[in-house]
Length: 188
Length: 234
Image 1 (cartoon, rainbow over the protein chains, first blue to last red):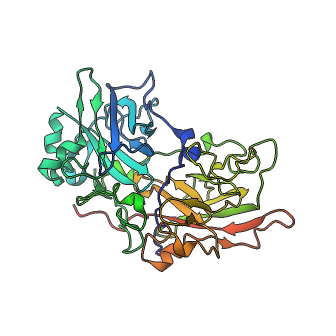
Image 2 (cartoon, rainbow over the protein chains, first blue to last red; image 1 turned 180 degrees about the vertical axis):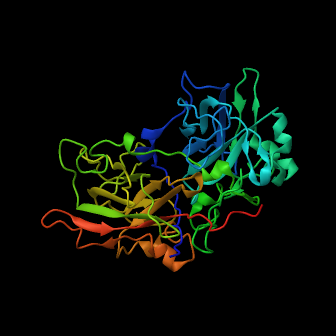
Image 3 (spheres, each protein chain N blue to C red; image 1 turned 90 degrees about the vertical axis):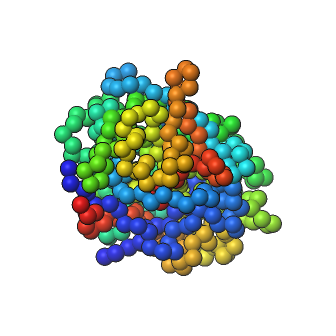
């Protein structure tokens, strides 16, 4: 039997009543292994106006580069203190902030290795289907060999790379639409 | 580690484009640059597994979350979550939210001049059973006006959010009711060209699920993306 997946529709402006119970802006707890990182930014639209009704979901591996999921059969240790899932709403100014640990490298396809990254889904009114993007970390040597970054036009790669500010907080914005700085989104 | 199968890509016409001008909010929120094709790696064929341990009693009964009964037509919605290969998807989280019988959301930004119901929050969640079945008891939501165009009204609908076994099966959508005259005018319902894909968003009346003297039954099945049959070439 072959079926087609149900059509996606927008979360709309009132998703909070159904989804905030699972908000999680601290993905790590006191016992989680790995380097703590905080990531903050803003969601803006094609006019540069803030999007104050967006929500992000984050999925990542643990510090060893292992996903807490049965499909990950790598010989690496799970961290009982880390699931790797975050649900992060934006505030009235379109800003978000979450904290986690920097993931380890994970395998890519065809024997490649992927640089440390987070998968990010973006939901909002006006997004009939959620967007999928990634966060990489500025200064990671492995970024240069990452097989997915290599698929992205060189001048747009910076939109996927979070940069630490003077306080060590990583900055990363979601530009839904724009001439220069539009975030790279993936056809998933 | 050898590569594992990815997930099937959508059939043409069954999933929306980001830009759908009839739905005005897409005009400034849709990417203008080409999407970059994503091969499905371990980062995407995995995903959060959030299950029954987080679900409490009454989480799937939206009529039993307050001291009194909500106003409106009591309904039971049930159905099966399958993947594109026709296999049931067990043990996955299903979240719903909706307006009350008067067409008003219990949300501070909903300014529609219709009454709130102190006995209705409009939020539910459950986990599919071993055969992929889910069930909610709730009240039928009302239609409500919105600012998309002159005299725009959303057809009655319930928002659904599902995780499935991977990042790629994540689905947020809306369920509609049969015979609703507003469907023909709704730019969100009409955001894809494929007629059968649209019609699969409409629940069907289910007399067998209907409880005499108590509640009407509706059946609505949901399909999540399925795995490709063959692994990607090495």
